[in-house]
Image (cartoon, rainbow over all chains, first blue to last red; front, side):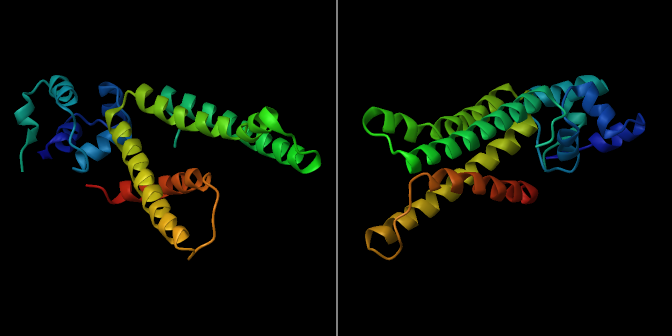
Length: 63
Length: 131
């Protein structure tokens, strides 16, 4: 699954650690999601979408 | 395993304590069996003593997976345990047949646990290459 997490994070000038703190996950999780090594669960995907105030499909896209 | 989150800190603390207990039990029991070997139920109890902290380490790993709130870290650690289990099963199965046909020396069963801990290292490598 592709995602726009890195772009959205950069637009807000957040580090991976900042985003991890806001999502209450580890920095490794943010890195793994951004680099496509891990697809988040549905609940985490919705938390990400809520944080960026965007629909899930605006952040994640099936390859 | 780094120790930034509470579940990892608890796990590290438990494993450190249990590892020290294991080392102490193994040294103590080996000394007792060398100096004046016990018999009967006491021998059983003493022989089992080093296994108790090792079992505790397996339980600590299971508790970590339950207590870890970060889903990605749970996946990473679960994959490590699965690779370790597969590695241990492959080696012990192959060794078992070689042993049955007298091609290799007999080894103690506790080597399965040692193989499993070694397999965790392989699991760590597998995580590096996992998509």
